[in-house]
Amino acid sequence: MNRERVLSYVLIFLLLFCAVSSVYLIRSKERGARIAKPKIGVVNIYGTISVPSRTTYIFGLRGSDRVVQQLRDLRRMNVRAVVLRINSPGGTLGACQEIVEEIKKLKEEKIPVVASCGDIAASGGYYIASVCDKIVLNPGTITGSIGVLMGTSNFEELLKKIGIEPEVIKSGKYKDMGSIYRALSDEERKLLQELVDETYNQFLKTVSEGRKIPVEELLPLAQGQIFTGEQAIKYKLADKIGNLNTSLEVAKKLAGIKGEVQIIENPMPLERFLGIFYDGAEVLAKLSEIL
Amino acid sequence: MMEFVYKEPNFYNVVFYPSATWKSLLGQRNFFKAIALYFFCQFSQIIGLSIFHREIFLMLPLFFINWILTVSIYHFTARAVGGGGDILSLFYLWAFTEIPLLFFPPAIIFTKMVGGGVVLLFLFFVCIYLWCFFLKIKAVQQVYYLSSLVAFLVLIFPPLILSFITAFSFLIYGVSFILW
Image 1 (cartoon, rainbow over the protein chains, first blue to last red):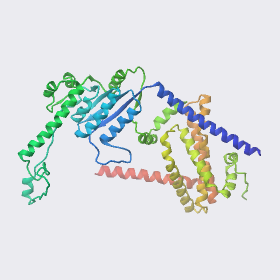
Image 2: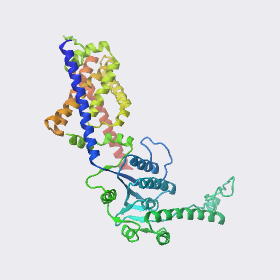
Image 3: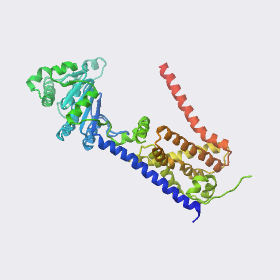
Image 4: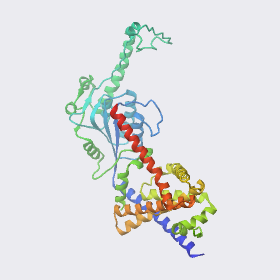
């Protein structure tokens, strides 16, 4: 065997050794950091909450589906607590209930959940916050708006004026209930009112259970009015004034964590993977940590 | 007069006598080895940049597409300036021009051993990328029978054009935004 061939094998061996050692070095640092620090998950609920109209997206789920999946992933990652960062004026009842269901699963596994409200956490936003163990908000956060609304418009007269006469063929007398082509009948109005009342009762029950306020006591506060953060604390609709950092502290306290924690903001694998491309600063920070 | 020196195609020669060894390698054209080498090099780079996640395996097709696209663009440019080589040779040699990336992990280990910081590691990385770039110049020069300067221009021209198009698009977008 000639000298160059021997050197080739030596070189390959050294490079492989270095590669394995580097992976081990990086992994052990990461593992060390993971072992040393308990995890707290942060999930953002921003904007109008709804179940997305499309089921698949290139970059993962959207709307309430995304929040539900993130909460599930955090539960599987054995986080010690979860902070929900809410900045939402509300949304659809179904979407909010799906999120609430997932929060309840976290609570069943004794994982404390803290709501951190930003500018606004009203209606559906407050509905979600109310099931959390603690609600932290700013003095000026707009919250409350406990109630349900449903609306439609009657364009019948307008359509007549411009010479349009809609023809509706229906299988049942209520099928076009709420249509813009005609006014609601008394019977339909009663039906829709019952529907609104039923969902309102669901809302009330959830808030009442979550905040541990009897329904009778909650009722005057649940007429759709909005409150500031300070007013909400006064009426026991929230627990503490503070920002996201305060919420993290509250979550740490509830989870019985002392010292530093690892914040997990994005548990979805695909987004973590895509994050590699734009987290240049993080890569540098990681390198300096390893070195 | 050109000097025809052939080296036995082993790893040592590929690293230390690239130009001479490539001549022998081009005669063999073992694409399986080239692909394996290319992926090893990319993984070393990933380890070096300490972004080694499980999800990185999703990037395998992207690496391959990137390889094909890059080589195609450089082949087109090289032919446009009068080069006479074939794309398969460049595709094959391209994998060998990525060999310096294998030195990312040793750079990390060395920096760790001497207690150097990110700056030292960054300098190592710059050297490695420069080494890669010089090898690429050599490869283009060898495959398309071009001078070093023209090979350098072939490599630098597409990124320059791309940067110009990007800057121009931003400019147009900015102007239209202001007008609207």
